Amino acid sequence: MQSLSSALKNLLMDDPLRQTPPCLEIANRVEWLASDAPVPYPEAVAFMEQRASAIAFGGARECVWLLEHPALYTAGTSADPAELIASDRFPVFKTGRGGRFTYHGPGQRVAYVMLDLSRRGRDVRTFVRTLESWMIAALGRLDVNGERRDDQIGVFAGGAKIASIGVRVRHWVTMHGVSLNVAPDLEHFSGIIPCGLTSPVTSLAALGAETDMAVVDRVLRETFAENFGGETVSANGPSRAR
Image (cartoon, rainbow, N blue to C red; front, side, top):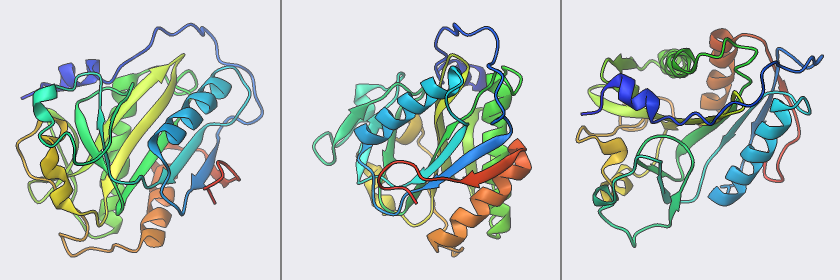
C-alpha cells in the first residue's frame, strides 16, 4: 500500500522556473467552464497545457473545467503495466499526471483544476488536501459522508473510493485534478487495478444519492469557492464548454 508521502511525490512536480508571480488584475477570479458533450482525452490535455502556460506567465486567469470523457483508461507516471488487466477494452493514454491507472467515462465528473500555487503558498501537499476537502464538502451537500484515509490520496465513502486525485504542477501551476464518480458503469473499473488499490470503488448512484449532473456541478462550484477562496466566473472556453 502506498504511503501518503510516497503518493505525494508521485503527483509529479516539474522543475519550477518562475520565481515570482505576475501582477495581474485577474487574481482571485477563477474561470469556471463546464462541457456538455464528452471531451476526447488528448483534446483536454492540450487545452490544460496551453492554459497552464498562459496562467504561469500572466496571460490568463486560473481555471476549473468540469467535463466527462468517453470511456478510457489513463496511466499515470507510476503506473504498473501489471495493473492493466484488460488492455484492449478501452483506449489507454499515458499521461503526465502523478499516480497509477484510473478510469474515466460517462457518468463521472472530472474537474481539471488549473491554479497558480505561486499565489497560493507553493505547497503541493496543502493543495492536494484542499482538493480532498473540496470533494468531502461537496459530498456532504449531497448527503454522502466522504472521508480521507491517512495512507491514501482521494476520498472514500462507505469503505469504497468515490473520488480520485492526480495532479501535475508545472511552473507552480496545477494541471489535472479530481474525478468524482456520479453514475458511471462501475464494472468498467474491473479492467484495471484502480490507483493500485484492491478496495472497491463506488458512486453517488450506488449510494442512492443525487446524480443529476447539473445539481452536482452547482454543488461543486459552491464548495470550490468555500475551500479555495476567491470568486468563480463563468466564461466561454473550449468548443465543447458552456
